[in-house]
Length: 448
Ligand code: ACO
Image (tube, helix red, strand yellow):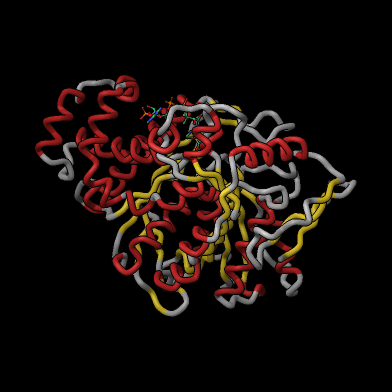
C-alpha cells in the first residue's frame, strides 16, 4: 500500500476547565508559577458524567459522522490509554457499541497501555496492519483517550483530559516516513500507578523530567544515525520543518527543543549558528549526567534555540497549553495544533514527532505532509475539527469547583451503585456521557 498514514482526525476535550492563573492563586503558589513556570494557560477535566470511555465514544462517533464513514468500513480499532477503568475489559470493547449497532463485529485490535505512549503503540499497530498482508482493504481507527488527574501538590496543575480519534489508510495526507524512526525503552520508576485503589499516579517529578530528556537524546541520536545511513548525509534540525513533543506541560517542551539544539551543537550540525556555538562552547565538555543537571546549560540553550523554537515548535503548543496533559492524546493534540495554526502552509513539510511514556517507552518518528484532496485533505481535517469553536465554547469553573469534582471522583473511583448528575447542560450536542454504574459495576452511557 502506498503512503499509509492518517486520513482524518477528530478531537474531543471536556467543556469544563479551570484557568491556571486562578488555580495558582487558589493553591497559594507564587504568581506565574503555573502560567510561566510550567507554561500552561488552562486545564480541562472530566465532570462526574464524563470519563475516558464517554470521551472516546464521542470522538469516534463524531469522526464517523462528519466524514460519512460507514462503521462497516472499519477493519481494525486500537485504543491507547493509561486510565484504568477495568483491569480486563478493554475500552475498545465499549467502543464496539457503535459498530455492533451497524452490524460490524469483525474488527481486530484491543488496548495498548504504557503511560502516555499507548496511543503511539496503537497507531504503529494500525499503520503496520494497513501496510501488511493481513490488511483486508478497510480503514483502521486509532483512539487516544485519557483523563490526567493528580493528587494535591505540585503535579496537580499538570493534569488535563481529551480523546482523539484518527482514521488510518493508504494515500493519506499525513504519511509515515517509517524508515526514520528510533526508540529508547528502559526500566524506570519515574511515574507509575501501583495503587489500584486510586486513579492518581506515584510521580517523581524531577526524575520524570530527566528520564524524558535522556530518552529524547537517545532517540534523536539513533534517528540521526539511521537518517545518515539511508540518505548519505547528516541529519540536523534544519531537515525538519516542525518538531512535535509529548507535552506534559509547555516548559518541558521548551527544554526538549533546547536539548535537541544542544545535541545538534555537539554533533557540529549546520543548524547551529556561530553566535550560538560561542555561547554553548563552555558546556561542550560536560558529561551526559552533568549536562542534565546544569541549570546554566538549560537556560543558555533555551535562549539560543528561541528563534528556531518560535518557528518550528510554537505552532504546535496551542491545545496542550489550553487543555493540559492529555497523556496518550497529548502528542497528537500538539500535532493537531500545528495543522490548525499552519494549515495552508504545510504541503510538503516534514514533521518530527517525539512520543514519551513514563516507565519508560519512547519513540521519535517522522511524518510527511501533503495537502491531499476531498474529505481527506489537511484543510478539511482542520475545518472538521473546529478547534477554535471548541475552545471558545468551554466553560470556566472555579478552582473550588474543580477540587470538589476531584474529591467526588476519588470517592467514586472503583465504586458501584451510583447515578450521575442529571444536569448535562454544559455538554455539547452529540456528546456521550455516563449515566450510571450499577451494582455489578456495569457502566451505562447515553448520547446528548
Ligand atoms: N514565576 C515563574 N516561574 C516560576 C515561578 C514563578 N512565580 N515559580 C516557579 N517557577 C518555575 C521554576 O523555576 C521551574 O521552572 P524551570 O524548571 O525552568 O526553572 C518551574 O516553574 C517548575 O517549578 P519547580 O519548583 O521546579 O517544580 P514543581 O515542584 O512545581 O513541580 C513538576 C513541577 C515536576 C513538573 C510537577 O508538576 C510534576 O511532577 N508533574 C507531573 C510529572 C510530569 O509531568 N513529568 C513529565 C514527563 S512524564 C509525564 O508525561 C507524566
